[in-house]
Every structure is written in C-alpha cells, then in structure tokens.
Amino acid sequence: MSLDIARSIAVSSLMTTQVQISVASANIANADTAGYTDKTANQVALVSGGAGAGTTITGITSNVDKLLLKSLMQATWSLGAADTNNSYLDKLQALYGSTSDNDGSGTSLANTIAALETAISSLSSSSGSAALQANAVSALDDVASQLRETSSGIQGLRGDADQDIASSVSDVNQQLSNIASLNSQIKQAAASGQPTADLEDQRNTALQDISSKMNVSYFISSSGDMQIYTGSGQALLDSTVHKLSFTAASSVTASSSYSATPPSGLSGITVNGVDVTAQISSGDIGALISLRDSVLPAAQDQLDQLATQLASSLNAVSNQGTAFPPPSSLTGTTAVTRDTLLDATGTVRIAETDQTGKLTSYADLDLSNYATVGDLIDGINNGDNGLSGVSASIDGNGHLVISSTSSGDGVAINEMTSSVGSSGVGLSDWLGLNDVVTATGASDFAVNSSLLSNSGLLPVATLDSSASLTIGSQVLSSGSTTVVNNLYSALTGSTSFSAVGGLGSTTGSFAEYAAAIVSDVASKASAASNTYTTKQTTQSTFASALSSESGVNLDEETAKISTLQNQYAAASQLIQAINEMFASLLTAVQSSTS
Image (cartoon, rainbow, N blue to C red; front, side):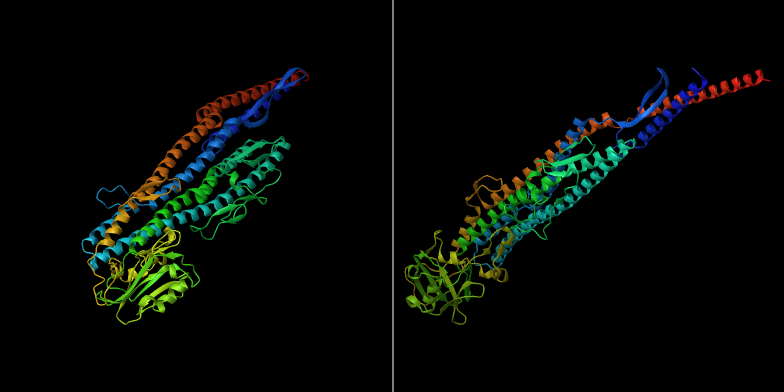
C-alpha cells in the first residue's frame, strides 16, 4: 500500500469521525427536545480494486418503529378525548353544587329543594303568617334561581365546547399545512442527498399534535409524502391540504342543536363541503363534539324534566287555592285567544269577595256551555248564572284576566269539577290563574312575578266549595292548611320521572330526583377521571417505549463521543506519522540525488 493511499484512508477516517462526533453532540444537545429521535451517522467501508480505501458516511438516519409510532398516535387521540371529557365533566359537576355536608348546608339542587320543603312545612303551622309566606316564596325563588343558573352553566359549557372546536380545528389546519411544507422539504433534501431525519422528526411531532385533536389514519407514500385521512378515509392531506371547516356559534342556548341532514343549527365540521363530523370520534375534537351535542344536552334534559314536573306539580296544587285577602284580578300564564278551543266539562266557581273574605257575588259556570275561551269571556261579562261584579278579558300578552269591577273587592276561583282538555286539569290550572311558577324548562323556571312583588298573594286559602253560598257569608279565610299541606305532599310525595339523559326512570320526591341527577353527574365525572388516568398511563407507556427505542440515551452518547475522540486522535496520529514518513522519504530522495 502506498503512503498516498494510507493518508487518504486516514483522512477519510478523520472526516467520518468528525461527522459522527457532530451527530452524537447534536443528540446530546437535543435529548430533551420534544419529538427528537436518536440519529446515527451510517458508516461504510470504501473499496477500490478489491482493497480497502477508507470509510465514508452514507447518511444520517433515525430508527423509528412504525408500528410503535402508530400505537402512540392512537393512544394520543384517546388521551386527548379523555383529557377533554375529564375537564368538562369536572366543570359540569361543579355547577350542581355540593351534597357532602351533613349539617344541611349543602349547595346542591337537592339541598335547595329540601330547604323549600322545610319552608312549606313551617307555613303549614300558620298558613296566614306573612313572614312564613315570604319565607316560602323566597325558598321557591332560590330553587328557581339555581335551576336557571345551572341551566345557564350547562349552555355556557356547550358554548365553550363550540368555541374550543373552532380553536382545535384551526390547530389541525395549521399542522396539516406544516406537514405539507415538511413533505416538500424532505423530498428536496432526499433528492440532493441531504439527511432528512430531523425533518421527519418535526413531521412526526406535527402528526402527534393532530392526533391529540382527532383520530386519523396516515401512511408514507413511495415518494416520501406523509398522507393523512379521517377515520373513514376522507383525505386531509394528499398532494394538497384539505382543510377542516367549522363556524363557531355566536351563542348557544338549550334549543341550539346540530343536524347534518339537513345542515342546521350548530355547525358541523366539513372537508371540501363534505360533513365529516361523525367521522371524528376521538381526540379533543371528538370529545368536544360529543359534549356539545350529546353529553351536555343530556344533562339539560334531566334538569328540564325536574323543572317542568316541579312546575306542573306545584301549579296543580296552587290552582286549587286562592290568595287571602283576594287580589283585585287573576291573570293567567297560558297564552290564549278568543278562538282557543276550551274542550271542557264540569263546573267552575268564580266569586267576588271583600277583603275580609265575605261573599259579594258568585256563580257556578257549566263549562260544557262554552266552546271557546271567547265564549267563556262573554259568559262572565254577560253575568251568566247571576255572576256580577266580575269581568274577563285577554291582555296584551295573550293571557286571560278575570277582575273585580268593584273598588276594594277581590276575585277568587275554585276549580270544583272542571276538567279541560285531554289532560283533564282544572280550569284555573289550565289557564294558570293561580300559578306560583312558570317554566318551559330549567332555563326559564321563575316564580310568578306577582308573588315576588307581594308574597301575600301566595294562594294558600280555598274558596268555599259548598253546594250553595250566601251573600255576606265568610267564604275565604286565612287559617286553611289544605293547600299548604298539598304543596308539601307534592314536593315530598312520589312522583314518576321518565328515563332521560342516561338516567333511568325512577319514582321519588323532587329532592330525591335532584339528588339522583347530581349523583349521575358525579358518577360520570368520576368515570371520566378514571378513564383519563388509564389513558394517560397507556399513552405514557407507548411514549416511553418509543423513547427507549428511538430516543437519546445520554450515557451511550457520552461514551460514544469518548470513543470517537480516541478514534479521531488515532486518525490524527496516523496522518502525522504518514506525513513524517513522507518527509523522511523526501529527504532520502533528495540525499540520493545530490
């Protein structure tokens, strides 16, 4: 072997070692860089004429287990969904208050309804007490406020989920663009013989970020492009980026909903005009869609059933009574017109009394004589059955108003045997003349505004139902406990509740049903927390396994650098020795020619 060849081999060794030291140093420097994988400078021997001609670096690569990477992506989108569910259900649970207090100071709906039970029970001992009536109305208003606030909180969470979907969709679109750019850079680098491992790391990191947002499938094409699809095969990135499209709602209410066929209400997620909402079943976005469209509406449905049945039960009882002293007018809560069909049977008693409850006028009206609300109004105004001192009309809100026409007198009603519509409720209940609350759901559950202004209008008295009454006789009194006791029974007795929102059908008091709702939410929150812990462990296991195989081992890299430094020093010494041999040879040649 000539000295020139020996020096060439030594120089190639020196250059190879320099590259390897540089790669090992980069590995150590990036040991804590997210997504970075251990790089290797691949060394091969050079052969010329069948003899060794030194070494060279053919490329800088990383060893990433593709199956392990796919498993990590799946674990990542499962963790993304679990994290989102855990966060939102924890917030939902907080909306319902605490039931853990043993001293009765809990803040849940069940505790608030129990406080209403106590206030009604206290009122039964003295139904005419202004202070106890005020206390009962205040307790009822507390229930109403909490129902509205809880409903508002649920819709607030739905609104947050809708906004978070928009944010996550934007993140996914950004990462799709980043991967498309990295695809181009990787192909350009490969074509020019440059290393692509670092670019591939960045691409995998971007893919992992997308996976935390939604479930996807992906593969690397023969040209080196990473192509990404939804779980059902809708292209998100092939030769071009196909961005997700989503429009966040300006506001979300209990009536807001998403529909794909036909598209309406809350926005779905589309790609090139195709609705892919149903294809996103996991990741942060999948969980947010489920929360917005299923989980939180289910919680609202439970709350609405509690609110509407509570309103119906309380009003059914309160409309059996009337206030004492009687109010100058009774205003219904049901919207009607003169043409509204009455479809009623039985009799109803309408009376005018003075402020002490003594009768000034009354009539028992046979409702089968009146086909419409307009007919009933005309009958009252025309003095049917000798009724006087009372008038009826429909106000600007479409509510029936029955008023005393005598200054200082009031009007009272007894449903008697009246039965209206298929439900068979009494006339006062059907019209809402003595309603204590109004509600179409939890979002608008409210105490009758007249009661909030004057708790003395709480209908706890009963108009005398004797077969006939005598003018001037006492037909109303403040000492009756019938209505109050019935209100208490309505609250504490057995009410049937349908299966709704994942909560099975049940029978019990309103406080018990409220407790069941709170318990159901707590159970779901606990399950979400446990799932999050499990998914976090699984994702961490895969991440650790990938890091163990493809990550940087500082001890190994440090030892490698030490070895490479020795190799570098040896190559340097070899070059120095060869240079000395060249110098000696040159001196010898010069001496032989002189």
